Amino acid sequence: MAGSKQQRVLLLEGDLRHPALSQVFGCVQPKGLTEAFYGKGSATRLLYRMDSPPLYLLFAGALRDRPLELLQSPQLIQLLAQLEQSFDWIVIDAPPVLPLADADLWTRLSDGVLLVVRENWTPRKILQKALDNLDKRALLGLVLNEASGLDGSYCKEYQGRMARKNC
Image 1 (cartoon, rainbow, N blue to C red):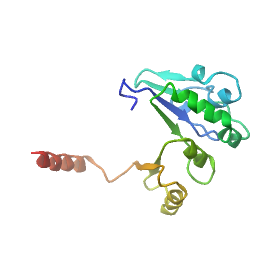
Image 2: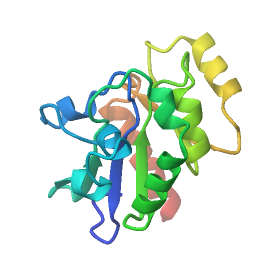
Image 3: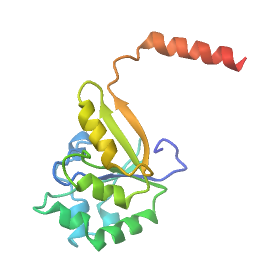
Image 4: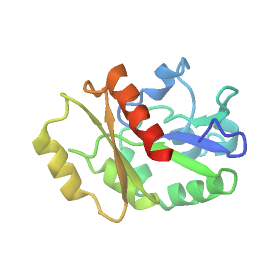
């Protein structure tokens, strides 16, 4: 989405308990969502912009003792509404669906959920419980990370079959 220069995309770090996006993007103790919530800066001034791909980031910010207070607040709804005015897409990197209520609260604030599962890491029982807990209407799809069964020969075979079908 961010690769399309016609779309403005915000990646919002929704894991307020164990934020990691700032490390992934090489930012040391960035201000973000919690500072915007507690009135220590406007959300638009706390955005980080990447040039390639053209992507905006809003990190979690400083850790707080009660993240559920922020997630259940009317201020968060107002903040998201403000951000929606500036972006075509807001992607929320939420914490795992289980065992905390955080992801459920983010689900209620979003238009859809894309569940990410790591092959040979996520137990089937946990995945089933997560799927059972999610509102089926909100589930957009599932992403399988680190899939081992897809190698180059599979891709070549698939491309060959698709070329024959299109002839």
